[in-house]
Length: 336
Image (cartoon, one colour):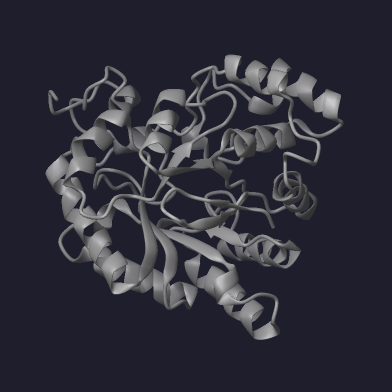
């Protein structure tokens, strides 16, 4: 497995496996896919408490260690604190639960899953709203981040990171951080490339990890909307796939890895799991890389089509999901 070394010194595999699938697949099916992936050669797994399967993933890891498939130090295991656990002391309890469920002594990385404490019931539909939802607040964010700094200081997480952020939010909180985030998760695929945010993070030593790297065809129905672009049907992606004799999904993964992100695709289908690994884990500079011209073609094909809109987190008075993402260049709901 080829690795990438971050500005902060973390060594991560070039590709990981996502484990968010429990809205469509049961926790046992997801853990079975993770078990196959681990034996196939995956060494990074992106987990989260809200996915509802960390206890099953923990059994997979324990079995792999017992059988000599891999050692703990060979893996890079990520988890995240959910929105309802941002309050004082709550993230500390959350990481303890994740460590217990995953049967680990430490995490390689621990993230704030979303930048606000807005909660939705698992499996809720896209029209659901929690009346307690509130706009982003740097002070509330830092209450949770201080706990992640403590988790890092205790050795319960080697690195800490942020997810689903925007540039205005990062500018509000980064000066307040005692421990800077080493990693950042963001939606990244050819139809939604976030170049400004991507470059902002890289310039500040935050390694991007890209979720929905092939456009997330298995995402929950609440995250699907009319007009969403299907990455694997984009003419630019299809044409490049034909030139290389590969599936369009693999073009998306190669694009992500060659751009410098770490894609975390999810699948429960063994042939797809293997193909996703093989197209990225070998050195893309020597094994059928996308050409410079193809990379330029894909960069120009960006449709600015966000798939995970997060509308279930909206607060009273918000105009629409766009307010979650500060599209006017300021933090919505605060006037900043």
